[in-house]
Image (cartoon, rainbow, N blue to C red; front, top):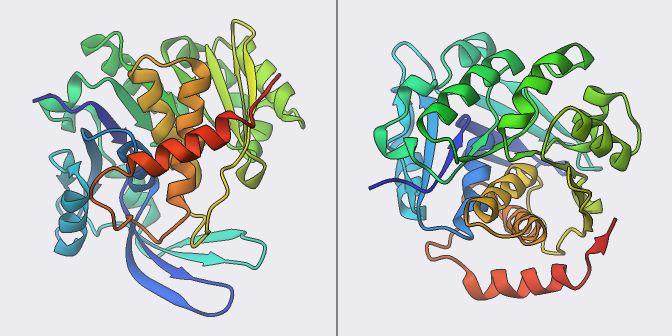
Length: 306
């Protein structure tokens, strides 16, 4: 059976330190994990493509399975320690990530397209937060050969700079959405205002751009001129880590399910709100459909057309 939505990314074990000195150790994390939380709000068919080591605590696999994640895409790499990092938060929610394992090994032993199980190849959509722009270009090409109609949602890669513009110009026409945060988009484009960032990136060939702005919400613009400003959904915040990844995870399910730009983006903002409410995985195992619909309606009433 094919899996509908895949995150092609990473798994990192987080050791979290809060501004007041509290800590929470051995928490399942990583961009891929948080994207899955966003997908799970809307889909019962989600899969995880990432690498792990033999040292991975079984509790993490059990938690993923219980949450409804297909883990057949998790690849065991020999002589690899599962990525682990300190996540240190300041009072203003600034996050400092310090790898406890070998960062170069983390990059070298990442998941590849060749690792994907057959059940992932015909997915409706992929969230990708993975590698350099040049490596991402090859991945996108590979995924589209097997599945030309797949919806690909990309976050910014590790080497984003104005020099990578030529590569992005080749990638963007092949994807459904590019969704950097405001800082990343500014670094890539050299622009200072979110709408100008969107406009610049659209000239590079992207059909759709979303600029994520944390508590200030997000703006979304399409190549056909449609644009929206969306609010952040209020919720009880426990951990801000990964809300942007969850936004992308929710967004890709909307695109894959054939929803409009606005309704897909609304899924993204609702997914982000669920990611904020706990450390790591939520404790619900059934999709919170009623609460998701309530938050969807709240956000829909507050969008602004650009």
